[in-house]
Amino acid sequence: MHPPLTLHRHPMCADIIEQFQKCHADHPISKFFGECTELKVKLDRCFRQEKALKRKANFEESKKFKERLQAYRKEINEKSTEDQNQKNV
Image (cartoon, rainbow, N blue to C red; front, side, top):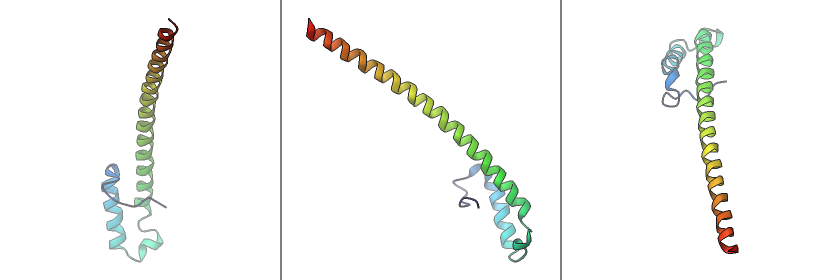
């Protein structure tokens, strides 16, 4: 099973998607007997590669977010201790 074959959601695999859809249109019966299987395998590989790239990009983005969050928490902690020190004086 594959995700919806919309070209705008899978720009990396657009040419293979078009070939696969053309194969299904050109071979309405023989597609059930393996006519388009080779293209389906290519499509699956392309989707896997695309997903791996997205996963890597998301991981990098989350690392940056965590770093910013830690810096913000450290800043807030320093401010609150500074405020408490001023109150005690």
